[in-house]
Amino acid sequence: MSNGMKIGTLYPLPGRPGSVTTKPNGSSLTRPEDKPFNQILQQQQQAVKFSSHAEQRIRQRGIQLQPETIAKLNQAVSQAASKGAVDSLIVLRDVALIVNVPNRTVVTALDHSQMADTVFTQIDSAVILH
Image (tube, rainbow, N blue to C red; front, side, top):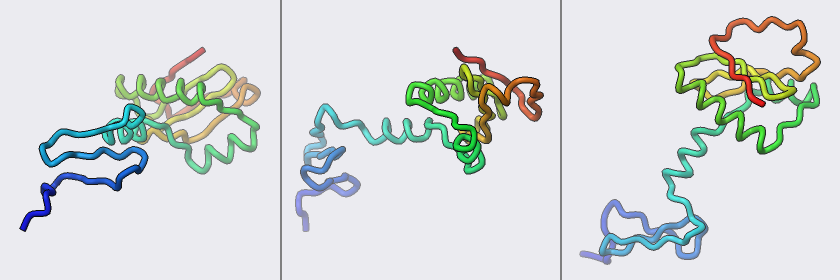
């Protein structure tokens, strides 16, 4: 009994954003604005997360993280990971962030005023960005 569908092939609902339709002959139809699932998954895995402690410190200290700053942060964490870093200090202009690199998680954040006369411990690397 065959209904024209292959086992193991995804047939998303028509008209759904991000859907890829696979024809029975194996070719696929995608819209140009759609991204392949693996690309979306990879972007999400590369995105830096913030611990609840870091989120609290960011709010308390009035730190503003713009999208371009987050993009630089993601790039810095990738750089640190490529060098084998585990816990890294990342300095972005007026903000210092301690990041657990393997988990891609910001552990805490300091603004410019808290960075003066501060000793950073329990880090194995530092990334300084402009």
